[in-house]
Image (cartoon, rainbow, N blue to C red; front, top):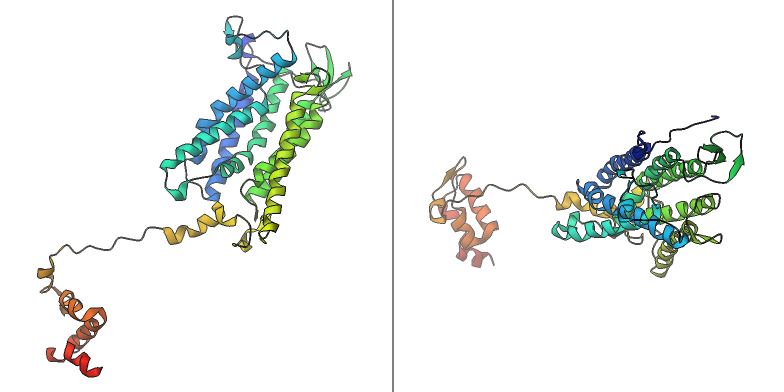
Length: 373
């Protein structure tokens, strides 16, 4: 336990920018783990970087935009300017004080749609669906959120209710501006996210596999449930309706229901089509009996060896009239002419007889074939 921890630092105040550093570390950790998962799943090598290039900028923009919109909605006295939106205050850059994770997820989802559209130029076997990208991304997002929440600690924000003048960390955190101890809700959520990351990573990268979209739906259920209850403890929430409805709690309920509906829809479709439910199925036993298995990369990568390009055979560019007199290690071969008249099988018999020392008159002719018939 700790009696006091203070890493508060905003770039505009001449202190070390812990918030930006921790957010950046969270992003870097997500990318590093995603690269490993993508390679293991069989996706093309640049997929993670394509996602990062399109999704990260839109995610940051969406997170900022979501915070500002709901701050203006719930707080009519909020003072926002174009410069402040982009992190400039008092003549200098102080960073983004206020990001909304749900707005970031919406922005990142738009980025995924862009990646999907750009994949039309790629070969069919390299194209990745929206849900396949979502599963890959949301398998690691909770790790980034767990790290990024400590940025709230550095900025002394995202705290809960007042607990008194004497307490301890991690139950509570001392807020300099308030002069007291408040529930460390940032820490609660960080730990919740780490647990969720471990669970989701096991379902995605473990030996049991599920349909495309399951990892995304599991994230929605797990994070939505945890965020709903943790948000109820916070004293600095964004309000949709003051003292009645918090923005994040409403969105938490919506994404929880979305995740649950995706899973229930899969179960219903599987039963309607007399298929097996493709949820946490042993990888070694996967087959077409599982609903949507043939649409997954797990199935497509089993076709890779069969679709691999064969080695190109040596091409003989010698004209046909010259090949008639060519000689190889076994002697003269008249394959082009014989195959033309007698077909490959009869020509093969002819060469066998020729190399055995039989006379050329013994070679099969059309009259011989008639006689045998």
